[in-house]
Amino acid sequence: MTRGICLAAAAVLLLPTSSAAEGTTAVVAAKIETGGAPCGVVAGAGAMWVSNAADATVVRVDPASNEVTARVAVHHHPCGLAFAAGSLWVQTAAGVVERIDAATARVVASVPVGRDSYDVQAGHGSVWVTNHADGTVTRIDPRTNRVRKTIRLPRGTKAAGLAITARHVWVGADATFAIYRIDPRTNRVLRVPTRRAGPAWFAAQPGSLWVANTGSDSISRLNPITGATLATVSVGKLPVDLELVNGELWVPNNRGDTITRVDAASRAVVETIAVGAQPIVIEAAFGDIWVTHFAGTDVWRIHPSP
Image (cartoon, rainbow, N blue to C red; front, side):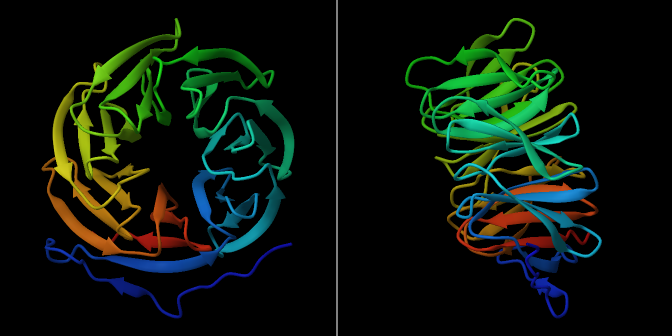
């Protein structure tokens, strides 16, 4: 059943809560009710897709109307989402990744992975899943829906977020001071120290790689080939799944109920935006910024005014 939406009666100006450059405030375009504890959000097949952890559902949102147009039941506590091979790949807490056909909005495969999976990304001909409790990464072949390889990280590692770059797959770890680099040609793992606590979640674009340090309330710019730390910027409390958009980092601060907007070139904080309870994932699509709120029921659509 399609659930209604809650649009702002008028665009709401989000005033920065700290110093910011003049004329750089963002505007809320809509607040869209999706379900309990919206967690992941991703664009694909002309729509936005949102996972609701409390409801065990994934919904499709029409960006033209901001209406929920489909609702799909999945295994419990879905969160991470990736779009590849015409499908939506959904990380769940049930030891499986669900594959949803974007055209029919139906589950077409459930692929066994590890315990307490955390994130899912697609690249280098595979779908990759981190398993937090196991300290492993599962590599899935999207042609067969079968596991190609289970890659083990060093003992005690809690695998968190993923990033795909031209040469490597990067794995965050929220209980260490290091990240891990996987060579997709060989599946070999290299530990890369970062000097910051809890480097867990990534934002990547060609030639650029950033990580959110959940244990030190900061983000770091990394060398996209070696992973070496190049610079670090302080943000809000418990930064999580950030996004790089038109030369800016948009960082959801999960315990601060804010988004920190950072100029990637100068590393200056452009503004700090008050949002809903426990923002967790940001996706840039259809000209706007979409942010989920794990302690709420809605996704905010924010227009990033210059």
